[in-house]
Length: 129
Image (cartoon, rainbow, N blue to C red):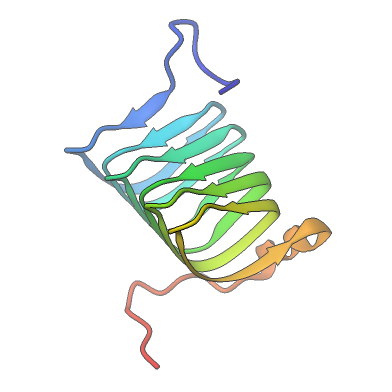
């Protein structure tokens, strides 16, 4: 990770923590707890195995082991690990999906990632078919 602070650490939501709201950061951010809201950073977002984001993510790069339910805009590389679950609308330049990952999303890749700004906001209610 490139955007760590002077102590060699990055911002983090611990696994016993639930945060509701909007997070704005210029550095890398790790989620091992639960975020109900949005996160916007010019760095990397890492969602650990127990991490959960229920809302939007906007970042430079992302590595997902946990769960994201919402709109996801990644300017460069989105890596989905075998334990991850991603649901929602995704826009990224490059997508890496490892075997075992659950990816139930509408995905736009390449130069079309700029279209993410026009994506509808995610409802708090479950969608059913």
